[in-house]
Length: 409
Image (cartoon, rainbow, N blue to C red; front, side, top):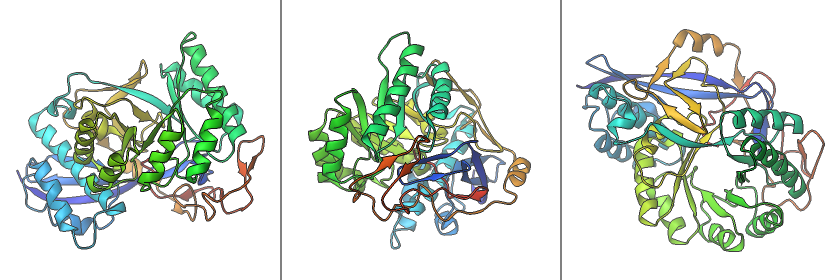
């Protein structure tokens, strides 16, 4: 079997409500989802959800190769981008190709990827994550009631700009999950999306811990700040979770060595091989791993095969437009199916119709505010949208705007 070519597509994730975090909000809830499809001479095609920036450059490492040599081809792609660098969005392109190759390998074997990778169970524990920063109280309650009805007993909220607002919203979600679990204590997490300084993080979380037993605080400071993450971890009771924006083992190593990570995260967009390697590194330090992403199907398959998986992020309950997934959610877990490969099916006709009229978005959670980490006072209105001293900090994206792919949570 040989790789003969690839194609790229872009569809959208339609939440039907505002989504975002402390850095910004997509008012129309529309996120772009790029896709790479890899072709072989035996008619098997593989699907990877992720960027296709510099795809031609990366594909040069794969052209004519046997796709079943996935891990060797992964390193070949890294070498192909050595001089310019494989971090950031190019790493996402490598991850998308990598996921597509795993899809092909499992299809060729006639098995679902979770079984090919050595998984014993098809279920993957999940936690709810609604990208909920822009929701009113009523919208927040409605969203998490749906998660609770599916058996989820842990939730991660977006916050970090106002202690009282975070306290209020955590209490609302705790009540929903506690009632659904007949009094059992739910797991609660807060994601600051790198919006604090070290002291702000310790102060904010310590204040919340007067009321809540937080399972973890996510990305409290900048992703690369090993000493800062370690400082926060020592200063609060909650675990510190981070890693979704790190690209390559070389970026995880100093954070783990400094004691800055208690929960090791990887983003679905970075690919299956990256997740497996990060999980092995984390396991060597007795640390749990947790995948994040809008559609983390590749990492869900991989999570069944690693000993240190703790829970995977469940965001939107609907797949991207034109994408069908062989999985469902029940009893608080993803349940993977038996279709060979990833179990992803693409309807290009539906995708083409969905993309009509979309334009580029100038702002949103993917743009770091100018004053992030340097805010002295913030307030919140009743609608839940934060008002800040500097108006650029939270600015909704215009309706009908197409936004860059948000595969991380």
